[in-house]
Image (cartoon, rainbow, N blue to C red; front, side):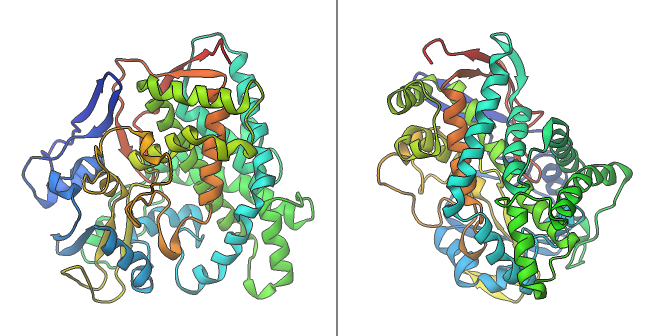
Length: 471
């Protein structure tokens, strides 16, 4: 199931006329072994899978005595995330330990009563009915990036991953915090989280050695510095809101008001910071990664880019796209949905079994690792024809994927509460920027997907910006 003892990744990318197979790890063909698994997964979790893993099935292996169950069947996924949700509610020790220093008991990694109590609060805050308020923020912030890019010389070189991280950080700050983070604040949070990702090990060895809760992450000086940069900014914003200096429409202000009405919620400064940090992380990082991959795909598939440009011209003319235009921007939506299929921002949804269970024909032991891997699921040929190809047209019209076969925002009770926020944000930002610019990836650049906490291009994505003369 895994490669040589020296970690490496064989990347495939194929370009033909009007056909693109974008960058992905080749199927693994080497020998298996616990040490190989550990080394290769730490280097690149996406390159450890054999061809058979990209099929509709449920399977089980043991790693150092710990059972790992791979669930890659829509019916079995429904069983895990919906029907037997309470038994598979817990995030794995790897994810909890990796994020607890940064997020505390935030919604993303909490479970039990804490999760049940706070989930409705966050649902209310990012509900789709609030999109008109947030949409104005998205439009304004994306337009500011157009102005900044326009001030650069044609052909300017930027790392578009960092550009998109700055854009989405500012959008989420204005939405969550109700005011501008400012360039320095947005940069501090973005760089802090980027550094945090690079320092976190994707394998918690203690879990596989028999510790059901895993072992705490070693809080090195570098890791502490990354977290303190993020916490310092978020703490100040939460304290300002508690002191009555918050924006009436911000997400944090809504949490503060809810706490005043319901003291039993016990949303103290630390809890408010944890939820604010969770919303920020989820709303900033995942959308930034999605937009980055969308620019890569459009650069490699100019025939799709032309359809996007033609649609924006037809729907919007020369005015800036708005949230109200989204129902008519079908190609823009299809590009984002296909991007999420090929490059799901969280490519691994892992759970820990609380009690013994049975998934398909596999008996699951307590504390076992249950892996749902959207990276595999979305590339399963029986569910998506030409699964490795970039084909946004599969999301045009009324046809939708088989239930539980397309889960870029997870599924069941733990589906991402910010689904509509993130999806609409990505579509709108794509439309606003694509209206004015071609974003070009060099033909000879080797793009390599890398899975840490989220799925990014390894080293970012260097591009050149070119103004559209017909915009």
